[in-house]
Image (tube, rainbow, N blue to C red):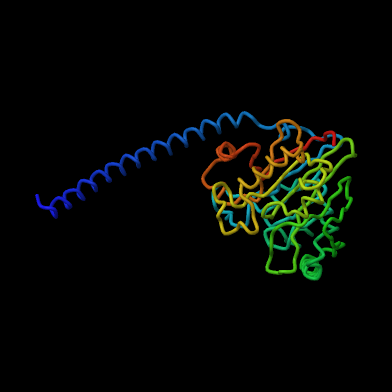
Length: 335
């Protein structure tokens, strides 16, 4: 066999070997995927039996009840099976954070909340006509989009025939007291088409200095900006203040999507997990035993084709995915 024939024969042999290795590798992958799926399925069945006590508790005293009226990002389609409604919450059946076109299904019929705090002006959070129809009479938004908010509510009032609400405009760090709650405006790492608009997240406090709840509600935001962390007392570069006792944060980018284009203005499940772990280690987050960090503003990327139990089984501790209509009672504890 001459040198040319030898090289041809070697190349053919290598190709055949490579194909065999590829087939074997594919088989291994298939087996691994099947094993992983089976593992998630088993974990989901176990997890379904481990419902956190805060999801079955009854509120009393300084406990804070949070009803998730929607837990999805803007990408969900109503006709899609298992879709999520756009994100908003109801606090103690009296105060809204955001309110959307899709929130009506889970707003209790006897409930007519008069107060609403908006995170920002995107349409999947801000729908003035819907807020007026829900009974809202007092509105808070960031002062950075004051004129647009007034114009939008003026149009909504004219369209619905309902009275114009009282509009209030928040500065960063400003605390408002309504219905027994103290709500502080915090800067979020998010943006709208109006480059001057400062999007917000909120610290919600209830109870006295010795007994209460401190909830950080963080959506929409890419991580926790340092200014927000310092106002709340989470920044480990300064002396710790009172720890937060409850934590709800967005996870728009989902699992294994840390390089998603939305990373400038949104968080992934991994980001939330790392944040929670750091806050626990530095004693900035001290929840009641067994209380998870709840994820909201969940995109298709995170939910995908998983059931609720499978989704929770796939999340790292201490994360748990909220779902539309979920009611959580954050128990008061020593602060």
